[in-house]
Image 1 (cartoon, rainbow over the protein chains, first blue to last red):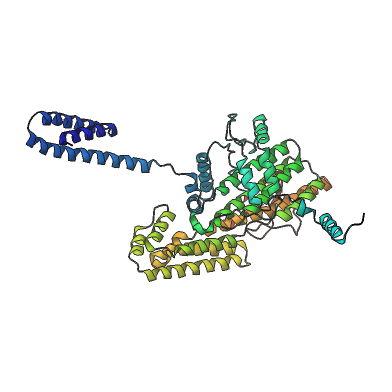
Image 2 (tube, chains in turn blue, red):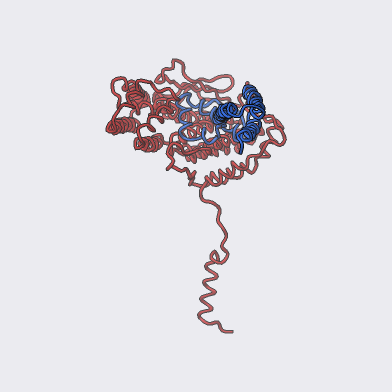
Length: 125
Length: 390
């Protein structure tokens, strides 16, 4: 495959994956370079193609890394994680029975559309 | 027609052993299986009933309006499973103890919800003047607390809390019920059979085993667990000391922890009164918290050992309130028999476990107040429980 065809394929791929403004600008600049590459100086064009290739690769890799960080941080904490013995003990150690009840309320909310009764806070009996 | 001996024996066997022929699967003998089915039977909110149901700010009770009644009706399968479950002596929740502290305990959340539902049912029954049914629901709460058990610290805490909720239910119902000697005597007898609460020593035994398993983990994992136990806020100096320690140090930390728990167990099993015991446990808690400053082998114990003084106080509060309820029932019975409340409490009644003395007693316009002195907990004022008498 010719370098310029390879570049064209890479642009198309990048266009699908990227959504960031900066990425758009870089893509536009690279496209202009590709056009001039096809029309004019082959030797200079190859060097530029290599640089553009490297830049695009970096842009795509960075974008995916950011997305993966976002994915990890937005993973919801399931009810099982806050209902382990360890987690419940931590809640109690930090805030007593009230904190334990709050953790249960939070888990109930995550578990689903169950009707909840307001817990009786008066554990005075 | 003469039957052969063989035929006769076959007929005798068929007659005596019907169960082998008409085998029918028996009902579960593990209450937990019925509770799990009760949890699965909670209705969804297809009718958009406004939730949660809040108790009235004035009475502290749920108003038994049509919304509440409809909701309880929708929960009838839940209550059926629960009533079947409490009749069984055995309750094994099927926890995967091999997971140690990572074991999920969703049943503790669901049993807590179930307890609140039973409490609301008790209140609605009392509002409908079905007092014995209301008290029966409170006794069901006691049995649920017993089934929750004390196999670990969380089970103990939830069990203790449900036990307290049951006592509160009894107190609320007694306040609405006209004096009835027969019902009160029945209640007194029933409470004796169900008032056995969870055992803190049992819960701590499991706690100790779970913690000791952690000392077999590699050092870095153990340190990460210690950090997590502190909510991510382990003293950086402690962390530094732990990370630079050699493997033999882990064994020393383990020995310190074992010694600390043995001392705690001995204190709990002692027969001294609450004040002395509480003071000793609190002293041990404080020592464990401050030891790491001069003694790095105490770090893991300081992190993993729960605040036992607080837990012990919760236990004694519920146990003392068992006694308080017994005294209240005596007073209600006195009123039912004689027509008036006594002027003072007679000797020989159950005591306030916080100080080993009689509860404070005062007649009021609405009924009476029983006071619980809790100076041992550092409180100046006693806790007052008002009981209405009809």
